[in-house]
Length: 112
Image (cartoon, rainbow, N blue to C red):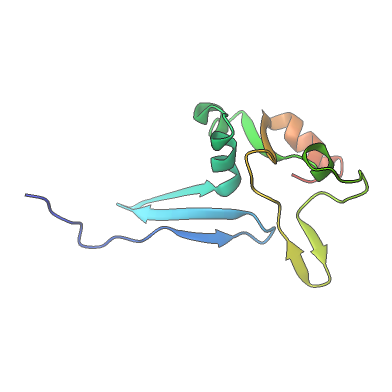
């Protein structure tokens, strides 16, 4: 006999204040969050163990590295007036990097 749980929260997709899309599921007292750019990295061939490792981050590559754009195009997310243009989440737009390299790059003025 198959029984259904009495109460089940449906996962939802939400944007952070910086424009990053994530999904969260709260089930059985646990809160699980996965970012869309993490799933894109896996779709692009990254090892899930690397994607969810405590020693790595999934980094949004600068637009000019994977699109035919000028280097002067600012990295996403970008504020235009009072609107936030989020980072583009595709397998081509993200890469798994060592956590400290990623953080050093961000602290140096570059965006995630």
